[in-house]
Image (tube, rainbow, N blue to C red; front, side, top):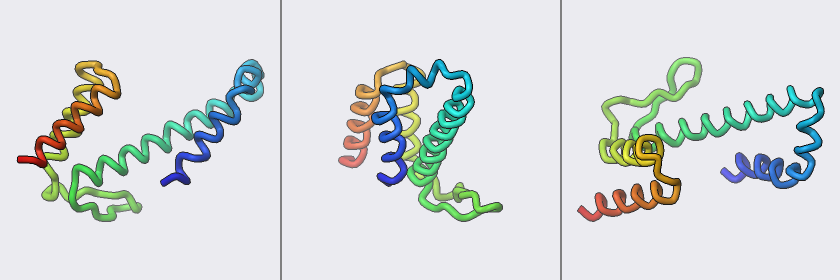
Amino acid sequence: LWVTFLPCFAWIFLGAPYVERLHDAARLKGALAGVTAAVVGVIANLALWFALRVVFAEIVPGPLGFDVPVLASIQPLALALVLLAGGCIFLWRLGVLASLGIAAAAGIFTTML
């Protein structure tokens, strides 16, 4: 998993001092837009991969190699926690730490039942 994130963080920390100079270069704007799109795509792919494996107990390979969840294997408790965390961030506009704390507390509470 570290192989996914290390290049992104290295790009950010090692290249940050030079970004302002690159931002003004018209010829590099297209390349920077492409890098940004690639990073967003990697993060979205990883988020979907984790979401499928958290909410569904069984994933099967579908057409074209895409992962397809078995709908009968849905885990209602995990789905409820995902919806709670999403509601904290997007609906109630809480911060990341508050949302993480609420989701963690709800997860701990449900395992103690």
